[in-house]
Length: 557
Image 1 (cartoon, rainbow, N blue to C red):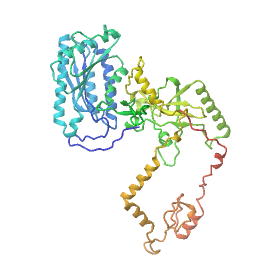
Image 2: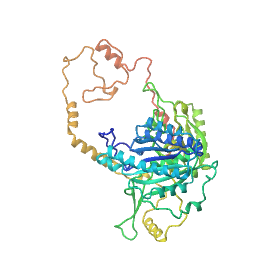
Image 3: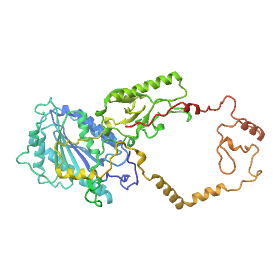
Image 4: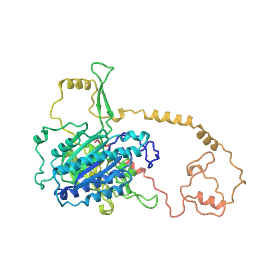
C-alpha cells in the first residue's frame, strides 16, 4: 500500500536520501502570485490557506520526494521573490514563513496598468528560470542533475485568463525556455468580482488571432475562489510526472495469432495518498492489516486487554454512489460477537440487532458511513478517520477505510461521449472472446506459487549462511557442565516436560507463572510442583463455547 524506501544513502550536499521509485524526474515548482488590488483582498486568504495545507502535507510525506524544489514569487507594485529555490522536505518552517509573508501583502493600494503588470509577470518568469539554472549548476552533481532537468511554473491571477496567456506568449516568444516544461495560468474567479464570471465554453475554445505557439505547453485553468478548488490545483504537484515511458501493459489474447498478444499500453495515476506515508503519533487509526492494528493502543501493562474500538454512524450512503477508488486498505469482516463474558440474553439480542442491520442495509442497497470516536478534539491535535460498512448476502458486514479530504488527490477523468471505432471494437471483442467467463470469483482457483518461492528462498538462505544452522546444532549437542561446577546452592531443579515448552535436550522449560521465592532446592521443588500460588486460578477452557456457535461465512464485497 505504501512506497517504502528501498535503497538509501546520504549525498555530500545536504544529506539527500536516494529513493528507488518512479518519482525520479519530478519537476521543480515555481508559484507566481499576482497580488494585485482590488481582487487580492478576496483571494488572499483562500490561496494562502490552500498553499499552507499543501506544504504541510508535502513536508510530512515519507517515501519518494514528490516536490523536490519550490520557489515563490509575488507581484504587487513590484516583482518580489518571497522564497528562492529550496527543498520542500524538511523545510516546513521556512515554507510556512514565506506563506505568511505572502498573506501580509496588502490588498489595497494603487492599481498598476496592464502593460506594467505584463512586464512584471514576464520578468518573474524569466527570473525564476535563471534562478533554477543557477541552483542546479551549483548544488546538483552527477546523477542528481538528471533528476531535475525541468521546471513547471504556475501563475495565479484574478484577471481574465485568456489575456494573461496572450501576454505571456507575446512576452516570452524570444526567450530561452529550454528548461521550462509547462506553464500553467490559474484564474480565480468569483461572482462578487465585476467581470470575473467564468466565460462560456465558446469563449474558451476561441483562440486570439495573434496567439503564438511557444516551445513549451501553456495551459489555462479556471477555478472558483474556494480552498477546496485551489487545493485541487496545487495537489496536482504530488502526482508522478515522469512521462519517460508507459507504466503498464495489458496483454490480451489475439484471436488471429496465438503467439502475438494484443498489447494495451497504460499509465497509472494515484487517487489518494496512503496514510502509511504520514508518520503520526497516534496514527490515523485506519490500519486494517490485522485485528491488532485496528484495535486502539493501550498504555500500561502488556497483558491489559484493549477496549473495543467505537465507530459512530454519521451518514447513510447509496451503494451506487460510493466510488471504489476512495476506499483503500485491507477489508475486515464484521460479524456478531460470540464473547463468552456476555450473558446469553444479551448475546441473543445483539445477534438479532446485527441481523436486522444487515438485512436493512442490503434490502435498501445502502452503506453506512462510520467515524472513529476520538478522545482528542481536532483543536488538540486529534485526527479523525472514517470507514464504510458494506452489507453482504451472508450474516456479516465488510469494513473498509475511506480516504479523507486531506489525502485525496485530484482526478479529473473525462467521460467519452463517442463510441469507439468499429475496427478497435472488433479487435477487443475478439480478444475477450478467447477468455473463459465465470460468474463468481473464487480465490481458491488463483495460485501465486508463494509456497514454493518461500521454500526455495529459505533453502538458498541456509546455503548462503550455513554457519547459522551449524551453530544451532552445536548448541543443541553441547555437553552439560558438571553438577558442582559453576553452580549455586539455590539452582532450580529440572521441571517435568508436561509443564512447559521443551527447549533443547535438557528438559528446560519456561515458567508460565513466576515461582515463589525459596531458600533451598527442596522448597523450590515443592512450590513449583504444586502449581500456581493461592489466589491465581487457572484459566478455564473455552472449548464448550465453540460447540454451539456457527461461524459466519466470509463477506462478499
